[in-house]
Length: 197
Image 1: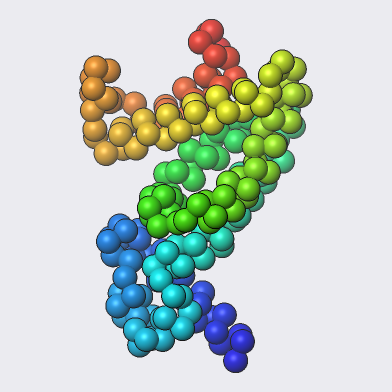
Image 2: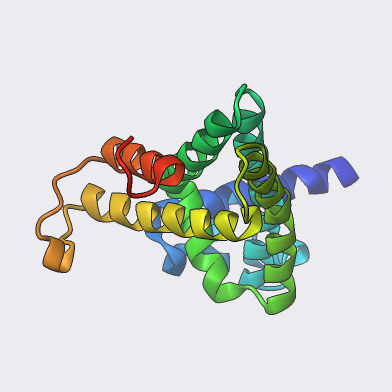
């Protein structure tokens, strides 16, 4: 019985991922979950009391897996600079994944502060790895640098999304770079600042 419930719950979470990826946050409804999984709508409520509970479960399952992917990428590198590059590229690759984008977008709207705090705690280990890599590079303020590095990553994510969607960058004009060029520029900026690489 417990195994059956776990399988049904996993199926509901898989369905939620598909709905979010294909239709955005508006697509994630209990009737849609029921239709995707073949369950009665009332049965969906046996697993999740609200849409926010579905989103929280997705975050609890997916965010640690995504963090582990980035951590593994960093661990496979030999030097501190390579670990920082793996961190930047790993986050950018993850941000390009439609499933990740969908879950992040809805979690910002649906989760309460306690749930957001649990997610921040899960990200804490990654931040610690970046601080360690910056310390290994000899940075004088590794914690501050880690926060600024995350800002570079977030700006690169936005730029790559704009470039992929054919958007414009305001005064910067038409976006001509592809996501790989954005990733290369973000890595160069992270490792060399404004000086030439």
